[in-house]
Image (cartoon, rainbow, N blue to C red):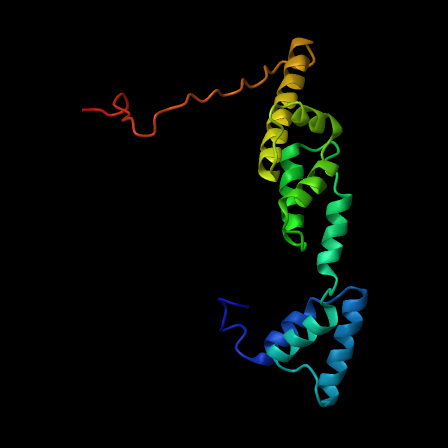
Length: 184
């Protein structure tokens, strides 16, 4: 509706547009009740955009959103996906919980990544002590594992595509000038 003021010029059109998308079970029943109220012009019916938005928030708001997100975090597992995919999903979910302590977030992260990665990261000296360091190391080891599997498949003749070689970045002085790249 935003950016298309001509098409949604009146409150009524906005309300009807939103109600037209409510087609499944509970939402459809809720919509039918609101349409009936509007047709009978009952007091307190939802006939303006602001009233509809407030009524939707009141009737459909999940008051246990943080608890539900925490349950999702507790059940989240890496499984056959990559550590990178798991980390992205984990970070999205954990931000919607009430957990702010890094140590507790790390506990939930470690609970969901594959056991082999936990052992690899615990094998470091020193062991990472923050969530961001754990995530960085878990992703690094998982990527190495994927590259090793690609290499083994190529070496064993299961694929004709050679594995991608890891890119080794050379440490550079950030203050040094790149003279070789400039053309005079």
